[in-house]
Length: 354
Picture 1 (cartoon, rainbow, N blue to C red):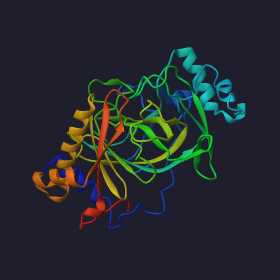
Picture 2: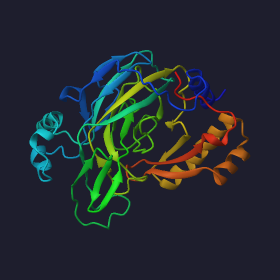
Picture 3: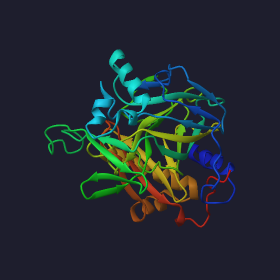
Picture 4: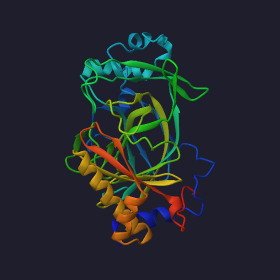
């Protein structure tokens, strides 16, 4: 039996018959705050001691801090947009001070969380139950970078306010865009090397910047170290596919996540995701063309394992029905994905019913 077959069977075994997430969500078993002691900046490491230990199946409410606006003086930075000092999170002020003192840089990641029973070769299912905005504003900093680096000659930090009652970002005068919060980074500790920078995603997950990972979706990650050692950060209020300027609306969020260990089904897998309507199969590489090829190859493998299609039928379906798109094209290791609709299959797959 292939690894992907084992993944699918293990996932189905935890559910009953419904296609949609259950209406009632479990209450958090733990709350993890984004204090200076509970965060790291710019790296993901198997040697970072865990700040929380949980059991498989438990739910954790996790505060995260966006790196956007974590300057030497975040109060002055956000004050440029009329944001009062008391509207700047205390976590941001404390982490900004620690950053100056310690020379920290990069993404701010909360964790790691040690999941009891998780061992290399297992799979960690991360259910995204809820995403809450901590503040009604965020930061986008376009400049001479991203996929079109010659458009702008200087970098500017744009503080973008939100209308929380209408769930929109006031993106520009006369332009309002819907808020779609998600976590840019969700990761387990890497295998080898044991420590990696937080910018480039990989088999451990990381900076996938995959905008479909909103509340109600699920991310599957291979366990590469004992306890998995899960971290999250780089929270986004909104992002288009590609994240073409190099950053989204970076804004502090509180995700509520449920962690489920699936024994022995994670060997050789790369991260993939699903929600009630679709599967999302990913491919990564430094070259976007190669990332697309790998996304197609992984989608073919998925279709063969999931529905018993032949490689011929699966590759044909990839060309005639599957939409392939760019998750992110700016984080060194680039991510493409294929969207496979669950509606195509007469046999329905259970989802979030237990």
